[in-house]
Length: 177
Image (cartoon, rainbow, N blue to C red; front, side, top):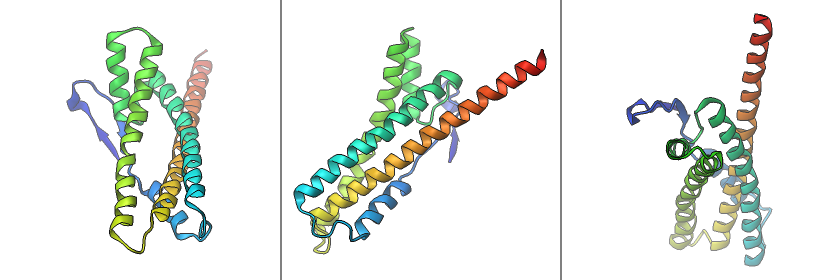
């Protein structure tokens, strides 16, 4: 889904709102599988911790690609990231500060999106006899793995798009000679 944000005073270009179906599908798939039947709570907590490490790896790829996109176009795949970047850029010439602000906006958004998953998983466990806290941990681990795959793919595709854009610019420059 694309939306124009011209009403915010500065044209932010287009950004994509990223709903969570891919992430939820990952959680549901792992939850529905029998792979983790009989796992202890300690094993499930270790799985959840590991899934956060994998998710962090996907985020690292996506945040890096987001920074490259911001530098190349001034656009972002994440609205709070571009707003934080623009705010930092208006206050300082420090690229380090601008990069930090863009990354903090991006990661802050992703962390805020965690709350509904926890509420859903543990709410279902508290309100249903059919869903245990272990089931909630499995669901959360699956959502993290789905999010990691999504973030990694997003970062890869953004970099791929930027690479083809640079290639087109090089080709245009050479053909003008």
